Image (tube, rainbow, N blue to C red; front, side):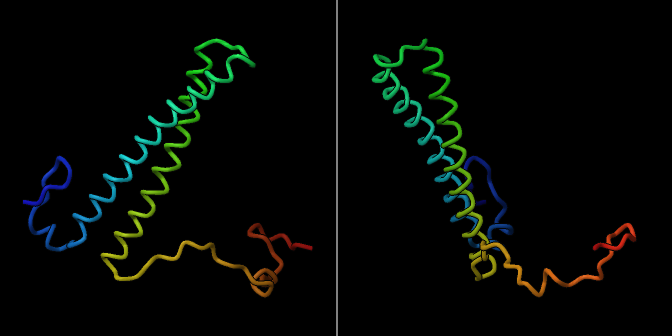
Length: 125
C-alpha cells in the first residue's frame, strides 16, 4: 500500500500511475499555499486597515469582513493557480507531453466560412 495523504492507494494503482506520489505532494503543497495565503492575507489586511482606522473610522466588524472576504478571494486564486500547475504536472507524468493552455486562434478564413443560414433555416444577411 502507498500512502497518499490520509488515504492508502493499492499497489496496483500506484504501479500503474508512477507519478501519483508527486501529484499528491503537489496538491498538498497547493492547498497549504492557499491556506497560508488566507491566513497571511487576513492578518496583513487587518493590520493595514487598523493603520487606516485613524483616517477612515469604521466599525471593527467591517474591518474583519473586508479582510476575510479579500483574503478568501486571494486564497481561491492562489489555490486554483497552483492546482492547475499540479494538473499539468499529472498530465506530463502520465503522457509525457505538456498541455497547451493558450486559447485557440481564429483566422479570418475560419470566420467567413458558413452557408449563411442559421440553425433555424433563416438566411443571414
